[in-house]
Length: 256
Image 1 (cartoon, rainbow, N blue to C red):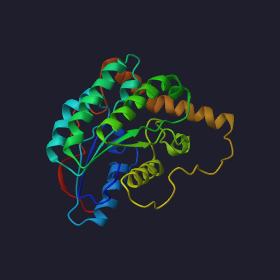
Image 2 (tube, rainbow, N blue to C red; image 1 turned 135 degrees about the vertical axis):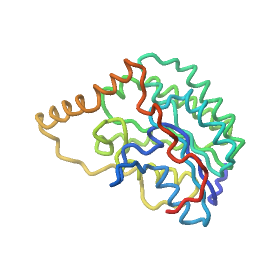
Image 3 (spheres, helix red, strand yellow; image 1 turned 90 degrees about the horizontal axis):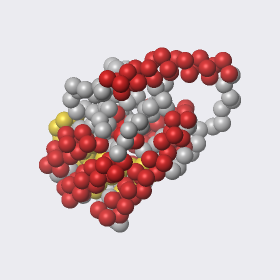
Image 4 (tube, one colour; image 1 turned 45 degrees about the vertical axis):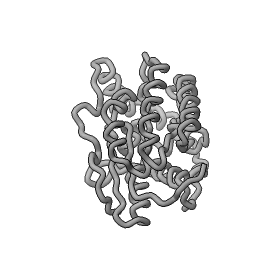
């Protein structure tokens, strides 16, 4: 497949990963890989337009129902779609249904743009990731098949391994930090046919292991500040994105 590296517009669909959590700016808002990618594309193309329809906490059915038709109507040059991982982390997950909804999204989006970009989502090393690996592998295999069928690009953020380093993740252990998002932006930039600015797959330097006390203190802080609220939302059927609008709902000129 030949990649056209000249693009004039970008629409990003998805959940918190694409919204940009937890690449926090000084004003408290989130930036993230999609904003970084848009900034780099806009610097090359006057009048470049960008929309980001992502909302944190969205499941694949919500992404399809709430974002796909809007994105398809925008007729952007590049569309990125990342979804389904939130579904795989739920105790009860109908993975066949997740794959069907993902296929529905790809089938509708691919004809609407010059280049559809899909991703094998990155995962932080740890017991939670290990537990859900079979679901993730099945999801990614389906993703690869859809990409081959519809001419999409797949950015493999999972297989490279560098993004699994806990030091590239925020304190909530669910979202990438600023350096993690920067690496994702570089990965997508290269997948779109642009020359590399650096090697996003390079592992971080080896660090001295933390003491048992520091690790346990971090675990307790994580449980108190992030895990317990997350479990509470699951038990009550709430989402962190309830009531939130899309990050950037209209396809408008973007200033880097």
